[in-house]
Length: 234
Image: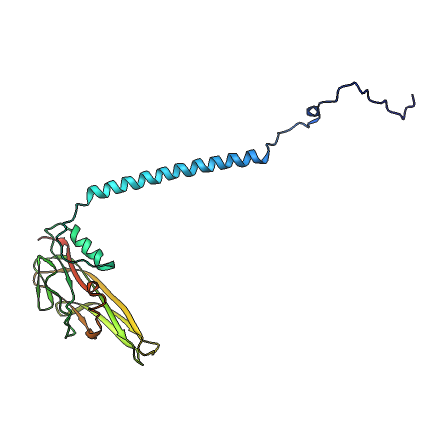
């Protein structure tokens, strides 16, 4: 036989097994198998986190339900937004604590604001626009007012002053109608708070230089003065 010629394959001979020609080394898994493995692992981790989060929320809800007593429902006032939050605080406060929650009077004729007497007044006396402290201690004082201004051709300053006795302790100031556009209604909120130690017979009052712009019609429940004892003996 010619050395350059190769012998023909025997048609009856079996074909060689392809697995015998796979080179040695690590065998790579198909891409779909790897992706499914990562998906299952991620799903299991997310499910575990969700279960843990729900369990934590349930524990916190149970603790809050146990720690906060049910407030009475015989309070006549009801506000909204910030004023409703203040009212909730007063409802949850122990009944022995001095507190007051008053809404502004609809008949304002002085820079010193007057307040409706039918609000919540406990351990504090109301007299001629003043809240008079009856028990010494650290008090939170919070005031919120809504203003309605019809702009003319000039800007205007709105100012709220929180007074303890005759001293201005806190104030809030804002300028409205700066654009000079006439007949444009501006709704403006002003609020201020104070934490201070107050002895017996201390008076608390609120001053507003432009009291005629206090909106007692659109948002009558949002004009409030609230005081409550934070720490002291009553």
